[in-house]
Length: 109
Image (tube, rainbow, N blue to C red; front, side):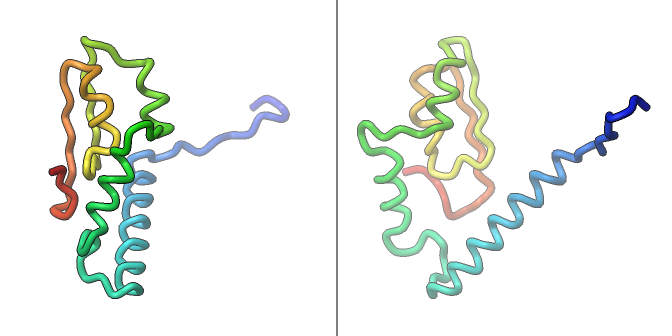
C-alpha cells in the first residue's frame, strides 16, 4: 500500500438506501402519532402537498438538475414517486415516464 493512502471499505448502496427509507418512514410514523394522525395523508395534508408541489413558478432543485439532461427520446423512472412531485414537471419533456409508489396513501389525482 502506498504511504498516505487509506483503504476505503466498500459501500453497500442498496442497504444504505433501505436504511435511509426505513428511517424516514419511522420518523413519519412517529410524528403522525405525535400529532394524532392515524393516516399520514388524512385531512387536508394531501391537498396541501399537491398545492405546494404544483404551484406555478415553483422550482424544485432535483427537477432543475434533471431537466437539461432529458429530451424527447428520454425515459424517466421515479421510484417512490408519491404524488408525482418530480415526474409531473418532467413528463412533457420526455417520451416515457414510469412512476412507482409503494405506499397506498400517496396516489396522484
